[in-house]
Image 1 (cartoon, rainbow, N blue to C red):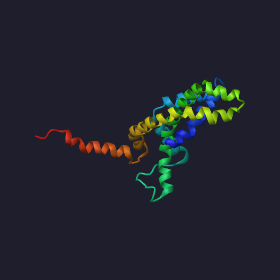
Image 2: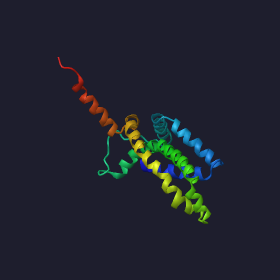
Image 3: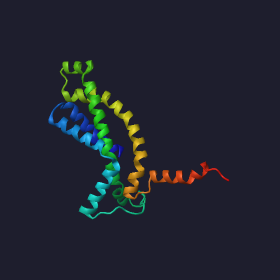
Image 4: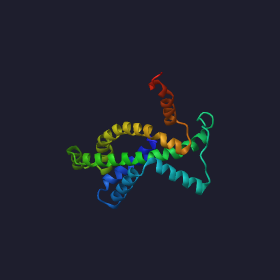
Length: 181
């Protein structure tokens, strides 16, 4: 989900920043805001309902490990990864756009343009290197958000994953905190 959010979010953020105040920027910002506003569990249930009604696909009720059957494991984890990646890509795109717009106003970027470098070369060699640093930092928070929100999505897709294990551990260790008589 993290890799997918980078693959989708980074190009969208770069395009929105490079075409500032154009229809591409406005549509990118609309979809960024839309995917930030939709709760993950609602989006998961909508995708699940869509795949059941249109493709007659139902999620597996038992876990299939990657080393046992990679194809079934991929089919089982693909839709949850898409759901996680949609919100993550919106966050990555928003941060990429904001930091790239800030970096494009720096003196060294203007100097690179003044030297006669192409816009693509200035973007790749100068601007994007510095603009992606806050996005990398944000990815750590994104990973924590994915781990925290995994409980609801694992329930929606019937995957006994890390969130499910986390809830079971809390339920088992609840007895530690109860006072014995």
